[in-house]
Length: 141
Image 1 (cartoon, rainbow, N blue to C red):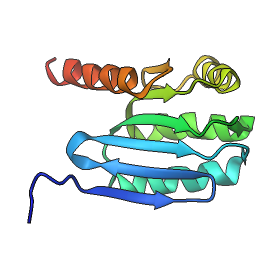
Image 2: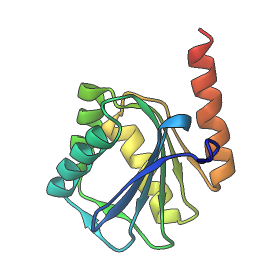
Image 3: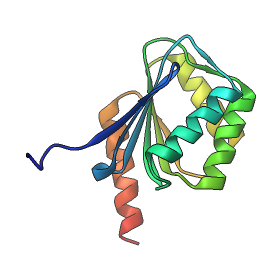
Image 4: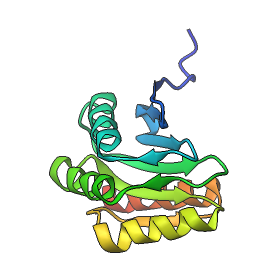
């Protein structure tokens, strides 16, 4: 067996695909576009994140397909509250080129006030670089 192959745990829900790679401590959330994410979706999302990551605090890379991702206010506040309560997220990087998604991410960061550092990027490489830089700083302090 090749030990260089990273084990990726995956959960696919009707509105999001979750990929967790323990060796890199990375949880990727790829949201489907043109879906309105409501409170019941958010509850299901958090349950799956906690199960998938075994309660560990992870780096989150949040992406979406090319369309708009809509999340209602209750869902946004539930997710931010769950992050404060369960501390399952070290930092979150949002990756999108869709202006409406960038505005929605800014709204989430400013008004829902998640407890971890959050930043919005236009490309995956910049987001991953920022996430691992934050994790390295945390480990070295």
